[in-house]
Length: 237
Image (tube, rainbow, N blue to C red; front, side, top):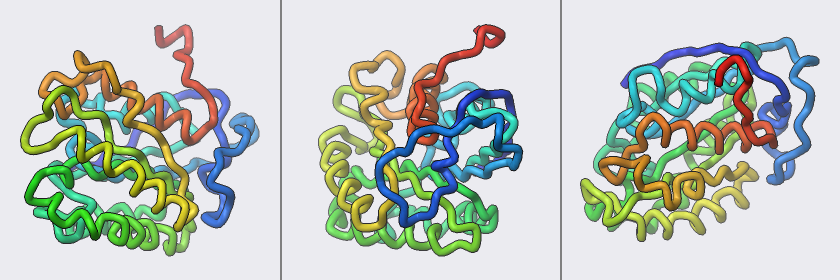
């Protein structure tokens, strides 16, 4: 596991990221970032896809999100390869040092992309605990002194027949579970799954998006945070 912090330039962000957890689950209208000078801290929680496996060095989706969001935001990667959302899974995220580090970071916003490794047969047998464990994870972040806004994501699309025991049918079965968790906790949902559907060429090993695929995830998260579609600045084209 590794962590890093990235800062770059941007226009037009939403203050929704730091809205109270009890706020509406609907994405609010974006505010003008030029009026916001305080750095917003975003914790990216997830597995190998968040950590950056499959993408070029320094080009994981949190890396690319940081470049999209800009200098008024601090994005830190707390992804750990092989981890599960399920506490009864073979490598529970909540038992990692990264989980403690993510909480110690006292973020203003938390973006969670977990569930991919839970689709493996040895973990899927515990699927009845998925919603309860997700609610517990959200609650632990929501109870931080920083009172972060929580964003929970549909797991990324798995290409073709999947790999490593990871598969698309179980991934799709997690989507309504995540919707129920969001409703119960008032967390906001980001559809990372749809961002990669039909883009199998961006997922060479059928599970881990390459650099371009990671960019698609970053753009979906950017839209979830800001309410805006990311448009690359001319200087970055």
